[in-house]
Length: 217
Image (cartoon, rainbow, N blue to C red; front, side, top):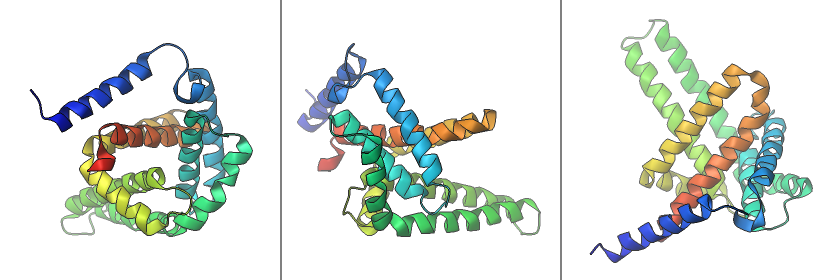
């Protein structure tokens, strides 16, 4: 017999898979077509709201919150989505401000390492790229752990812990980032969609974390 905690986690995963594969409505009574429509709406909203760059993380957080409400059967109109942006900006503005600065500095390191001007430039470039990837994953998980009224410090601490404890989920976010990058590379207008796809990926990873009992670790 397996350990009770392991068996319980397997049971939760099994029930979640059964619900996901069952025909008919999804969580909250929504359908796959309705969920796809909400993802498109969130994608367009995130793209527009992220134009100042420093609002990108709060915009994704508001998108995740909107999709979570949609799947929970709560009010999920466009007005509700936009109403969630203000609290997200107020709570997560330090993250939104820090991420572009960090990525800009790391991007410069990657660029200068490719010029051959730095000794060991290849190592510097690889390390800088990996750190940038980790920073983006933590930012996405911060968007997923955020709730209205929860400050940046608490959200980042929780996100950092989950990013390390749930490497599988973090890997899924890396895959989502890669798919999003390929989509935009193939067709630039898909930039209006990837925000919704990333928000949905963040929500799925957070649900996976909860189903696996992460909230009780």
